[in-house]
Length: 206
Image (cartoon, rainbow, N blue to C red; front, side, top):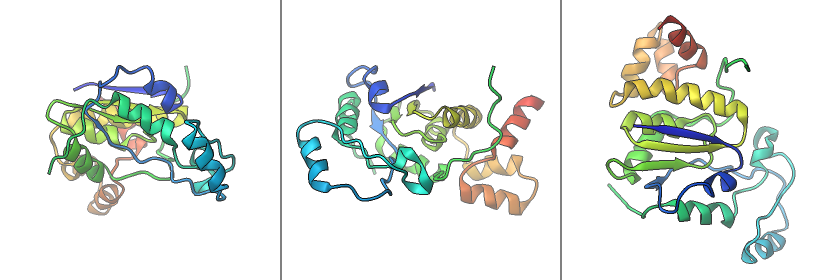
């Protein structure tokens, strides 16, 4: 199992990947919860094959959530997708996961397992704090992630490195090893993650 994170714009970073080099695309793209744009203007750009830049803050004022990803993103994602399959799967390090929309690892693990063939490579062009990468690591899939925000890249790297040590294990079992109480363990399961503080403390003790 191997994993790689590219820091930068996902369209630019996906362009560096070979055509048909990933087996699945599993992601949680921006929601676009900002002021509604002129839809006719958006469609004119998209139908002309251009991207649409919508300024402003989205969810919790985050600039990366100003608007939903356009066709350029999905065209590039489709290019690097090997095949479509359906199966019935010197800076200080981060001290905490402050991403506002963290997804539970167990949920992303189910999605990764659902759409990635055995021995396949999974891509997340909107990595955030790395839940998809953690899920891929637990399932033993190779993984490629893209994230433009360097702070989130550092968080994702720490989380994926940790979960990669526990391939094949259940999230709840792993969290139970690091939780000081049943209440803390339940909180970790609900959030789908161990805090970055716990991960760094474990690495320091190793």
